[in-house]
Length: 273
Image (spheres, rainbow, N blue to C red):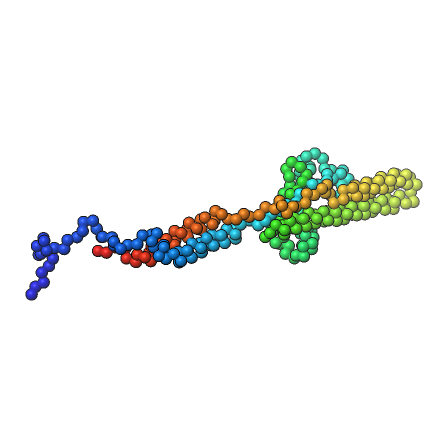
């Protein structure tokens, strides 16, 4: 018998298609019901999302920061560290130059010795110094995982700056005086055996002695070149706050993911033909 095709059937015998398209399964579970059905797995997804958001925020969160302020003494005219400081422009240049000295190898080595550390490169990354544009002050900023470490680092940096500056001043003073002494010796040698040159040499030697005395006096008064220090305070440490925003974002994202997963699990087949 020949199989009858659908085209030969009478209109009333042809399969009727619903003009509205596929019919939704009446047993489909809603989002809220799906989440409630899989509440424990949904809660786990939300918790994981929140923890991941908080973890990411803590990784990129800034460390605790403490600051120490150093007020510089103005060098005198016979200063061996910065002679001839006159006017605001010269003082600003001097302050900027001394600000750079805070992160020098000598100062960082002193800081490392105080704190019992050997990671000079890490110390250089954790310390910064910025000169004031309106006064002869330097602000040292120290970063550390916690407030107490930040305070110790800032305090150690300020102390190291003073110690190493004083060493530099003493070294330069000794070098300058030694140079003057050498000049005096040369004058004496040149004047030896000459009565005519003896009077001129005496005057020159006297002036050289005055210069050496002025340098010693200036260096003694200048000391470490610091007028005063505002030490870092534990109650002024800037620390990262609780990442409330990140917690909220993680909760919302986790809720959306949990709801989607629960709904798909509760409705494996959304439509039927």
